Amino acid sequence: MKVILLKSLERVGKPFDIVEVKDGYARNYLFPQKMAIEATDGNIRGLEKSKKRFSKQMDKIRMESMDLVERVNNLSVKATIKTGMDGKTFGSITSADLASLLKAEGVEIDKKNIVLEEPLKQPGVYDIKVHLGENMNAVFKLAVLEEGV
Image 1 (cartoon, one colour):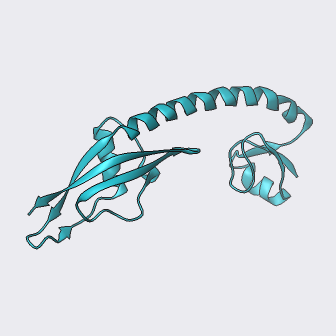
Image 2 (cartoon, one colour):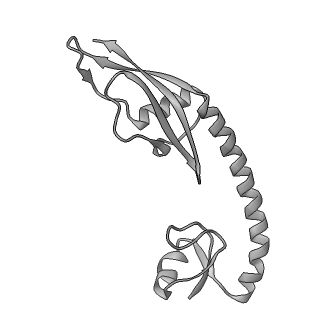
Image 3 (spheres, rainbow, N blue to C red):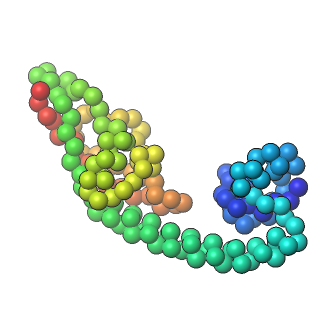
């Protein structure tokens, strides 16, 4: 069955692509989730208007994301981690902690967009990567300081 995608789907296509998918996948998943519509003649004609409207929205989102990337790249944040007498750390700094630190700086980023290989458990200076959209990444500096118990 030929469908017009309304959302980007990995391994299927981008919005407004006309793709061939299995009938069951289209009827049971794509149509109920409003991720695609059937590629009829009328829908294909309406596709051009939708593309123009969508491209304007995407340009606006792209500009906002570029502004956010610039703000995040120029950001430097400090956090503290509790350490004991012998230098052992208690707890760690997670992506949720970083999201709240960024929010305090005036930058609203979802914790899912902060890329951490593992929670930070040692004092030091780290470069933290933030995924802000399609092919848009930013990096900010994080200084983790010791807080004695």
